[in-house]
Image (tube, rainbow, N blue to C red):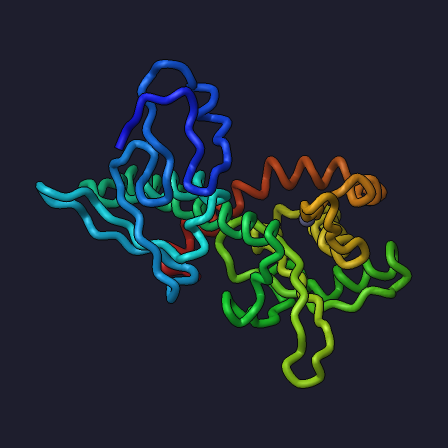
Length: 273
Ligand SMILES: [Zn+2]
């Protein structure tokens, strides 16, 4: 479906800056949540899907169709939907070693972006609706309980209360969530740390850095400012820099962590985990 337009708004009336850039007399596809931007993949939504996507290849007469979780129909997910269209395109083609690798990369981008969007919307990723994480603080290299205790004592006078676990997700995302204990109704903080930090090549300051960052989310809860949920506000960023090895951690996080995550995904795929 295409139209001659000055610029397009999507179904929810929000401007897409990418399309506004392409504005003018050129023909651009209409953005909707019913199909990918180029119209090559159709989208349907299922309320029962939480953390999975399905697709049906197209035949001669029909385009491939992907079924997504219902929450992915909103404007924030436009970018994720494009990635899903890319995934469908790759997954429908004949498989080679290179295309399999690309499929894994695209899938991991899809779920990392999804986690980020849901977290920014304040969705509790640890809630039963998504997935209840098992608490596994003991890793191959680091015991997170020890790291948390040291960070808590050094930077928070031991005042923070949280459970901490290595994350079961394959992406490099670490996050903090709050759950309510079903019995006591008490609030429970859960910090999940990417297993990309549980490597021999990870210095103690790096794993301490990410634990410190997640601890700060407990100390400085998200605020709603002008209707927007601010997670990493100015105050947060200022306090984040008080971490002794801040620069070294950021460097490690951006340079080494992605490599470890790739190794993890490879190992997982070969069935060694
Ligand atoms: Zn954060």
